[in-house]
Image (tube, rainbow, N blue to C red):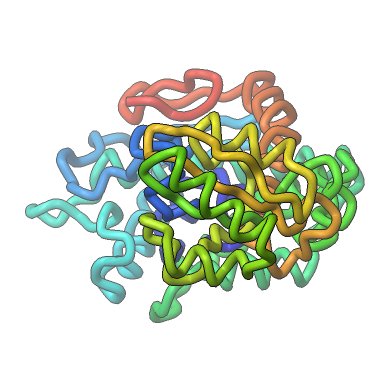
Length: 335
């Protein structure tokens, strides 16, 4: 996943962004099948109803006094539909219905981005912030292989304001601009560790394996390849590097407390008996060894830092929407 993709709070950005990709070792991993991945809700992609017949000069949206008329909305809906038709599968929720009419769902999405753009502009101005080339490059990098149309250019221009605002909030919170810089500042506190283990069915077998390493001086990886019953056996028991919380509790506790390079006594879990070695921990774990986990932790810290200001921004906004398109619930335009 792109390091800051999750920051974008426009549903349109999320809809157009190209998707891309955690011990996977089932012998010690916790069950993450029900974990909350904080993914945004899916954008409506099936046009269902046409907007009402309103006069072109009807104000359908007001955001802190900045107004959008029905005529302006209709003009943008036509341009957005052109983009969707030119780029099948990229933004089908912008397509007109079977009768050729723009849908309420498409109108609501566009009005939502207009809300966000006005609020982002005002908040940036209040903070003395400005859009940078890096902000623009970030948004453009999230857009997949598409044909450029006038509406896409407008969409990118608006989205960049949201990205810039969140970058400014991140800077105010003192959070480093890149995951690698952030990791260098926080590695010691994160408690990430690199570990390996030998999994056996009985405590006697685990004791015997440990004795070969501790008493006889056999190589840990060699013993693991020879004896371990787990899927990591062929790779010398290597479990990689990450947050110990990814493992079942008994194993995680051992990884957190075991001195580096010391071979543990057998640790029992639901999978069997483990002989564990922690090869490095904290600042000794290089970023390249932990890039994915470190990036995720960095993203979570940014998310926590920006969520409050963004919530306050939307909650304090004076937003009115024509009832034909929905109602403002303090966060979004709801049906």
